[in-house]
Length: 107
Image 1: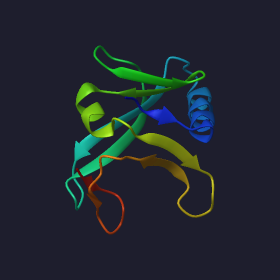
Image 2: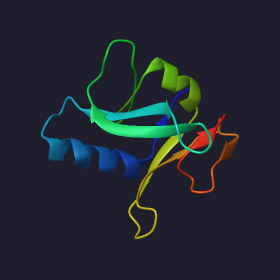
Image 3: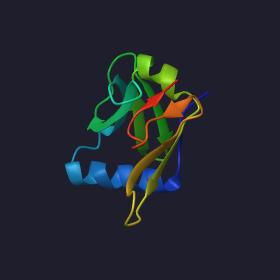
């Protein structure tokens, strides 16, 4: 399977990369330990490293390390521009439960 990127998320990734001024960057999504439920997402602009999986929508790139991909396989990345809950959202079919604040999850 893969990680899918919505058109809105791709537009935002392109915008962030353009602002950073480095076309080699992509959005790295990582799953790290922490939060109320045990796991949480970390996102940052980064370059591809050996062993990474890269997913694209046009020229927008999402970069995921192998370990994080085990938790993210089948996920859809979207972006919301609204006043409430603005930012990237992940619809991850592997999540079994989330914490009350929605910042962490368990599989």
